[in-house]
Length: 148
Image 1 (cartoon, rainbow, N blue to C red):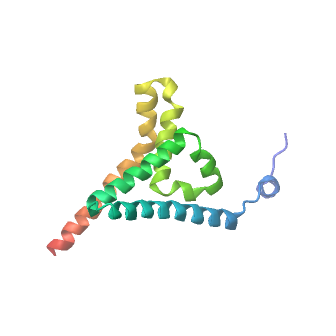
Image 2 (cartoon, one colour):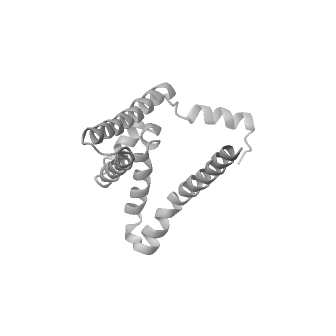
Image 3 (tube, helix red, strand yellow):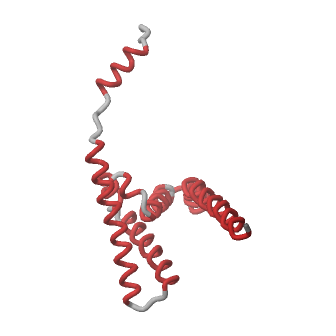
């Protein structure tokens, strides 16, 4: 076996690596992510039309978006949607719901505790920990800014 120089290796990687249509992917992600956000805004406006208070409206909008993401994952539609949209489908809260539901579906065969319980939070754990920690830091900064 012959040793390959770094330059030769980089040349081979460049030849065999597929070109990614970055602009097209960005446009798809922007459009799909925007459509998900518009859908959330339509839900929000409809809840206002029904006379629901501002606090409850925000909560219900998030719950409905999560429910839609989980249902689409359960019917194996969200994965096809995600392949088309890329990051545009993963950034909104529906993407987080998809990630949690798909890991729960994937590891269901291993049992409820070992499969779903551990694998579900192996993905969600870092996200939730970061969210709680960030909220704590922002709360402390807000509290200090009110004191000063």
